Amino acid sequence: MSSDHYAVIDAVIAMEKNNYLATIVNVEGTAYRKEGTLMYITETGKEEGLLTGGCVEQDLLARIEMQKEAKAFLMEYDLRSEDDLTWGQGVGCDGKIYIMVEPITPATSAVFQQLKSYMQKGESVKLIKSFHKINKFLVNTVIPLGKEETNPALTSFLDTGNNYIFTQVLSPQPRLIIYGAGPDVRPVVYFASKAGFYVILSDWREANCSVDNFPDAKEYQIGSPTQVLDAINPSENDYVLLMTHNFSKDQEFVHLLLERRVKFLGLLGSKKRSEKLLAEKIKPDWVHYPVGISIHSESPEEIAISITAQLIKIKNSKNSVMGKIG
Image (cartoon, rainbow, N blue to C red; front, side):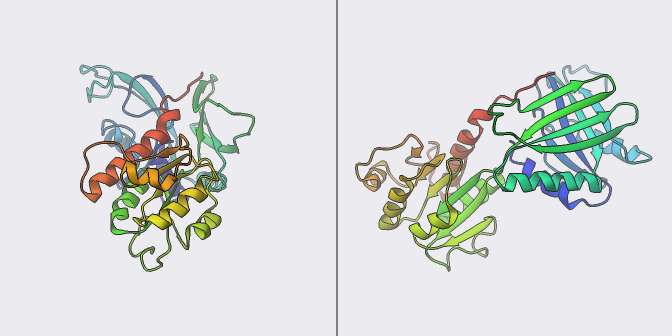
């Protein structure tokens, strides 16, 4: 699930007047973004999310402004040829995209609030859009994803004759738990939150671990490694970074976490230090050190970028290809 989906969902729930939701529902060939990409648009041109590299957004806004009454509509953009005269942009992106645009109503906002409540409980959901071609009426429905559906298609687009039906699977925001609230953690929190992670910051020093120092974190936990892990209760879907620079705290944290299982544990520091932290324990495949992708990083910002890149790579590895039926 794209990192900007969560910001769009929050914007839809807020539901200011005269705003629209645009969704890529079908792609033929290749395009900048894939099916299921969301974008929030206002009449004044404010945007949340991105559908393309700027190819169609202004055209969509112009069409919204020309509407006499707020109705849903489906737009087709053929970007495959530089000589394309379909809508006059000639961007040559080698694909055709179909975008469903809908006014955000109280009913839409209520569905997205329901959607978010499921995801906050760790449940994936199906969002189903049914668009009636003649009446230009669109209905959103959300249902929790059944546990028996272990490998559903992430998106589907179906033309029934009278209706277009688009279905997409939306997953909970991935949690990133960071233990350590030193100055070098600030850019990590910033970049990771922008990449779509729900950042939980923790430290035993209350003065360090605060909203004033880390405004981009979502939660703050104060305590020893034992207290923090008991309070947060990491699951096998969570990402964890250890960044305290305190060997005894780090070792306590590592040994406690090895009794559990998480999706990713990144250890800051050298390979030698990390192996000392493990104290000859068998290294699970979800433990990574030195954390981050090798880009010869030096500054805190560069290190943060390398760490965030590794987190994104792992997060997106199983979702790199979006399924489609219909």
